[in-house]
Image (cartoon, rainbow over all chains, first blue to last red; front, side, top):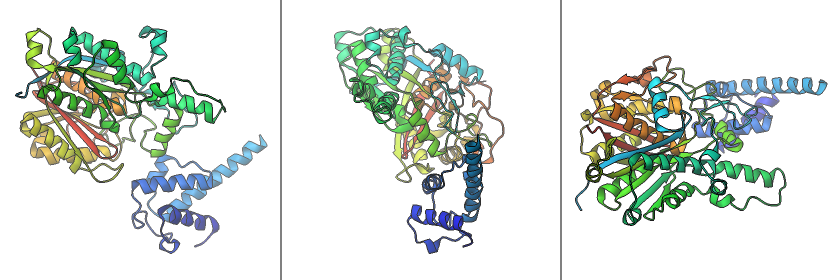
Length: 90
Length: 405
């Protein structure tokens, strides 16, 4: 596992699905992890809450692997952080 | 008592397509959608902005102040639709008939707009109290109760809550009561008003609401669009209707129910297929006798292909000859009221020989390879039609109607 954000996303997935962390790798697909549509909704909710982001429906639908999820969260968290700093300047 | 034939003799409707049955039918025939930006709730913090609201609605045109105070918007729509249906049927209530008339309404969430407003007051504004009529406004049976009080109807009255299949369950039960003789007359249908901030946030979290519009069976469909409204049908024995010279819209011939026993939100193929089969068996007709289906057709990525497979499972090769359309593309998904709106649409389609289209259709989806009557209504003499409703929770209800000439 390469970085802190990825670690945290994996941790959220493991907690949300109630599975051991070791079972979750960047290469895992959501299907491998046994996440059905409702599990995925719960996971998106957990990620939005933990990272204080809003994940658009279309982006959520296109995600197949943990790696895609990590990169998606990274992008949204970065956008949110820059948005916040812009707001605080204004 | 031998089973009686059951006629639809009165219709009432209020929804995004209009405040009465003629405007509803005109919009359906024109393929005109009532979907537009939501105005009753500030949606700037909601991920979707469009809905099918009842426009230009003024409660004061329908209710005295004292009565309006008792009624959440969902109960107002139930009562308005029931008044229209009773007037349309020309029924004159005698004391005996009032005791022998049943009222069965469907609603998924009852007066949740009242709940949202009043709970906001205590949670958010620290108000020490809520309005004293909050409970009677919220209760999902309020529609049925107010209809009974309005007309002095004192027979069996209750409310069914099976999410998006509520009204079909209600109409189906009413049909069986009239058919068996358990009731001499029935007013059945449903009403729903989903436009409150809290409820819209809950739908947002489900990630099934389209950001644009409702395009059932279209490849680029992105989800459902919430709608509001009410619709009621008057059901009575065909013999009685003919004896009093009442206009008969159509005959209710079958009702079938099933449950998926599967997933709380993901639909199955088998459950809906069994409900359609049960409706055909109850009507004692073959699958080949049916030529139109008013689809559940929510426009979500998962419903439409599943419904297509279920229809193919039941109808086999005959599925290729069926016309199948979803009027949710025009009046939105009115949840507990949806199948009442669609029952009215189906009855009118049989009566007028015109099939309402699936509006907003752009591109065929190989997974939804049925004739979905895209965008343009179509003249068609149909003898038998089904109206499908498949609810979250895997609860399915299908009605079968027959044209009467």
